[in-house]
Length: 397
Image 1: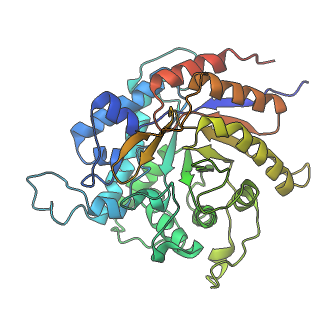
Image 2 (image 1 turned 180 degrees about the vertical axis):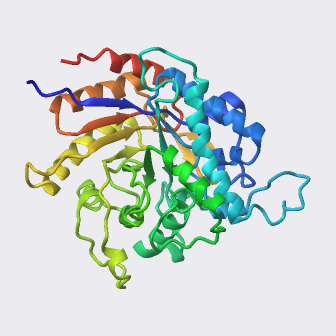
Image 3 (image 1 turned 90 degrees about the horizontal axis):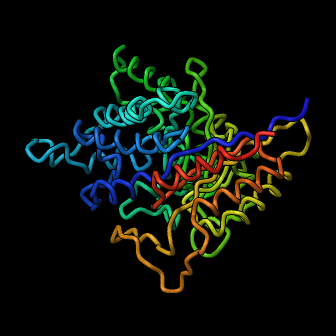
C-alpha cells in the first residue's frame, strides 16, 4: 500500500488587522486586550463571531480564538462600560477568566454561523478551534513580542511558566501547580470543563524568547491526569532581517528548545520536578514573519529536527507556518500603526501564491507529519479562500 500523502490543514488569517480594516475597530492604550476587548460586551462578541465566520466561509479548517493578547493584567486595565462604577478598577480575575473562556465558544459558534458546504469537514461544527495564547510580551504595554525585551520579573523560565500557567488555568479545569483564586464551585468547574472540551488544540504563538518556549512546555506538562490533554503547537517570530529570534537564538537552538527533552538550569534555581517536565508539542513552526524569510527558516528547521530526532522510531512533528501578509510594512508597537519601510521591496508574487509554493515544496520533501498553514498579520479571508482553492487542487496521489 503506497504511503498516504502528507495532510495539509488550513488555518485562518489575521484577526486584529481584519477587525481594523473591515469593521473599523482600532486599538489604543485604553484597549490593551486588542481583539480580546470584544469579549467584554455581547454586541462586540457578535462582531467577533462574524469575523471568525468569514474565515470559516473562506475554507479555514482551524480557527484561532480571540485570546492572543488576553491576560489578567489587560483585563484589569480595561473598561466594562462607561457607566459602570467598575471603570476605574477594571475587570477582576474571576470575570476575566469567564470572558476568556467565552472566546472559545465564539470561535466554535462561528463554524455554525458560516453555513453548510456539504462534504467539507470544517463547516457546521466539525471545524477545529485552537486556543490562541500569545507570549508574555504581547500583553505588555507597549507590546514587546517583536523585541523580546521583558521586564525584570519575567526573565526566567520559572517566572514565565507561572505566568502562562495562571492564564492556562482560566481554560483548563485541572492543572498541577496553578494558582487559582476562582471559586471552587461546581458551576465554575463545570464551565471550565465545557470550555476545555471545546478546545481541540492549543497554540502558543509568536514566542520571541527561547526561555519562553521551555516555559510553555512546562506549563502544558502541568495538565493533570483528570483533565484531557490537548495537542499543542509552538510557533516563533523571526522579525527583521536576521534568521534568529529577537533574543538572538538561532533555529537550531529554537528547535532544541521546542523538541529536546533536556532542560538546562539557566535560571540557577531549583523548582523540583515541575521544572524538569517538558511536554512535547504536536507541531512547531513560524508565524508573524515575512513570507520571503519562510522557506529558509523551514529548511533550517528541517535540518535542526534531524539533529533532535535521532532514530526512525521517533516521529516528526507537524509543521505550522502562518506568515504575515505585509507588503513592506512594519508594526510600530508604540503608535499601534503599520508603517512603510523605505528600503522594503514589494514582492511581485501574490502572498497566497508564495505561501502555496513553499508548502507544496515542503510537502514534496515529505519530512513533516503534517502541515498547518494560514496567515498572520494583514492577511484576509480572501487570501485564505485562494489558498483553500490551491490546496484543494493538489494531487492526492
